[in-house]
Each structure stands twice: as C-alpha cells, then as structure tokens.
Length: 81
Image 1 (cartoon, rainbow, N blue to C red):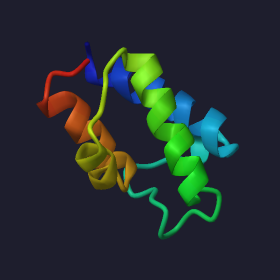
Image 2: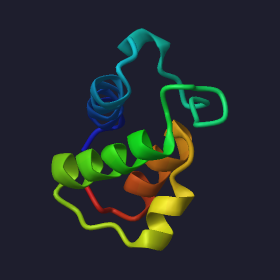
Image 3: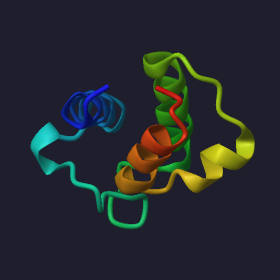
Image 4: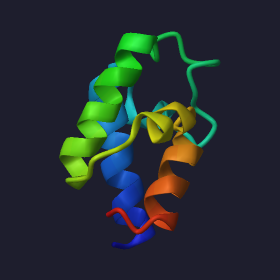
C-alpha cells in the first residue's frame, strides 16, 4: 500500500473517530495535545484500525499507539496492512 493511501485512510479514520477535521490531523497528534482523544476514544480508534486494516492488535501494541506517527509507523513497519 502506498504511503499516501495509508495516510489518507488513517486520517479519515481519525477524523471520524475523534470528530475532528481531517486538515487538523498531523503526525504529532496524540492524546496529550488532543482533548477529543480520550481513553474511550482510544479504544474506539483501535477497534476502527483493526476493522479498517483487517488486523488484530495485542493489548501491548494498542498501548504503544499514542500518536498518529506511531500508529502509521507500526502499520508500515510490521507489514500488517
């Protein structure tokens, strides 16, 4: 999958789950700087990622996905997409 396609899919997912405009999403977006990214929103985001990319994440993996950059890198580096 091309990086642009992955990035577009991920940004669309984040926009829907967090209820924020796609244009406000960057690699630096995280729960620390985004009030909409609550613990419940994180769980919903993980479920949406699993559904969108047809993968199953371990609890340990979900705890490491604390920014858009980390989510994207995980998906790229593990070949889970």
